[in-house]
Amino acid sequence: MVKLLSQDTALQAIRPIANQGKLETVGRLCRSLNEFMTFAVNTCVIEHNRLADIGKAFFTVKVTNQASLEPKDLPELLKTINYASIKPITRCLLEWQLHTMTRPTETAGARWDETDKEKMLWVIPAERMKKGRVHTVPLTQQTLDLLETIDFITGESEYLFPADKSNKNHINKETANKALVRMGFKGRQTSHGLRALASTTLNEQNFDADIIEAALSHVDRDKVRSAYNRTDYLGRRKVLMA
Image 1 (cartoon, rainbow, N blue to C red):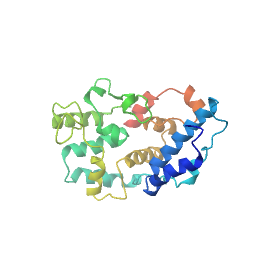
Image 2 (image 1 turned 180 degrees about the horizontal axis):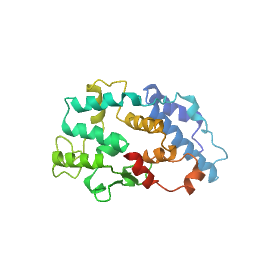
Image 3 (image 1 turned 90 degrees about the vertical axis):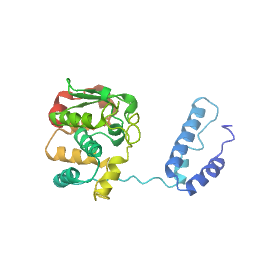
Image 4 (image 1 turned 45 degrees about the vertical axis):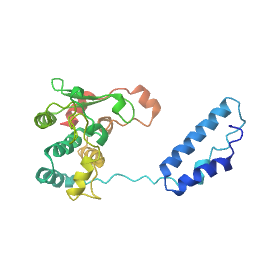
């Protein structure tokens, strides 16, 4: 099969998908084919990878940053959230995400058994994190107060933010985005962009960039540095989060 897999054959198979505009799917297919062929080379099935540059035959997805307000506009956002005609749990969802600097998916799926009020920590398991690593979020007095409000609203659900139809499921990750659109922030602020807003605000306040990156659960791009620098800066992050 590998020997018969020519560049022309691969292109004919991928072009219909590209013509449908499914560029992310095309990218994944090209990467998978390249890995498959590289394995074949390394195991001496073929002499060279004929599909090494196949991705260059297609347009790639243009990466755009999530819309985010400037730090000076943060008071406007908070005031709007406070007075908006949205469900109380949606208001808490937005405030929790902004306070904890977590991704929409991580916030929406937050569970009560991940939180420890006494230790003032929210420990998100690896399987729920983008990078597949456990992420610990220091809880401030503000977030602990918010937990009390959330507990009053959600009742006995295992999730901090249960779905409307059943408290056995968590809220949709797009709920915060839709609320921001309804509040008039379309094109100005997205749910994921709240992380950028928090990061920019903290950088302007001269917090250490490494501490901010740790709070965002970003992995150090320097693999050597990352291997040796395994600290999560928890103590210093407690100050930052407050």
